[in-house]
Image (cartoon, rainbow, N blue to C red; front, top):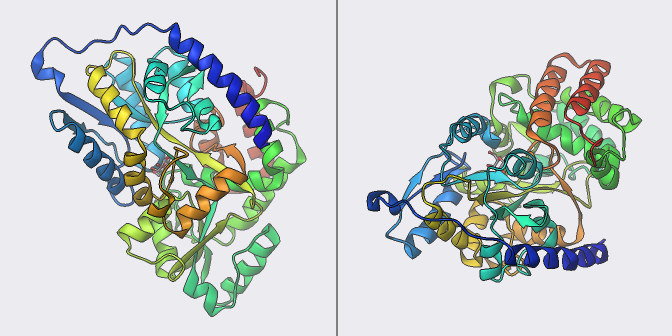
Length: 431
Ligand code: GAL
């Protein structure tokens, strides 16, 4: 797989250089000097587990550009729950923020780039000498038709099982590698009166998040990827198996899951009220910084059941929307977030790994170091719940149908709804 990537990467780099040469830059600052030195950054990184990393990033930026006043315009809600609606309205009204958080993959390319809402950034990439500083797989996720549209600041891993170390040690349990192991451990825990699996799906994406790990676990990484490219069909029996497995898993979750958000479910594990949860590694930022718990003493990590060797990637990126009021300040911000210095200030706190290949591994704890290595050797697949695998319309319909499934457990209805959503959103058929 690495070989295929390197040939692809060469071709891709050539395309991007050619595109950069032919690109004209018609960007200018507002003539009103009061407006010039501002920068509105729009994200959903606010509150527990989200904000600390952003503050570290902004600190690096303001140290370098003290003359630019940052407007931190965050909209609360995990995975952009509320942010996405606000952003869509602003872009529709031609009032975009100067830059906004966006996942690489379909969310960037099929929603904003395809609608002609983003400026290409190839010139920034070449000026900064970034072409060989980011993995080709990531550059591809932020590119369309040879043009680069955003700068990745990190890579989060979606398919992580977090477990309470003391509870596991007390009952002589090991992190479950397979679905069978998971159900055995869950039975042991249930018999002891401990909630085996914490879920907090008040925001429905969290249920989709758990489902995508199960789906990757039944399909395997190659066919999980082929599902999004149309080479595996939605009536594949392993998709039914994913729903059956998911349904069984749901019999081990906390009954009040619909009243809680992702931080609550992670906190349950941190406090030992539940033994395990499947959550992206922003959970580590929350466990370490907010709950002040210790990695490998209080909590441990492992790939979600049946996903060893699979890395479901979520990359947070920032770009330059067309019509942004402060494009030059935005480019300065993008220049900073693409630097190793800023990535190494942000990611150890956020729980993610740097997008850059030359970051300083010594700044990362054992989780970060392991994840940096896994990203190099594992099979990389895009996240469905976080908008990289498929367009937003499909993700929204999946959130809806999985939310209904969690409440009703009706496998045939879920399968029908999933196939309908895929057809309605042309998943697979256009590739
Ligand atoms: C993801 C995002 C992460 C984290 C998480 C929880 O979509 O990529 O950075 O913020 O949502 O809100």
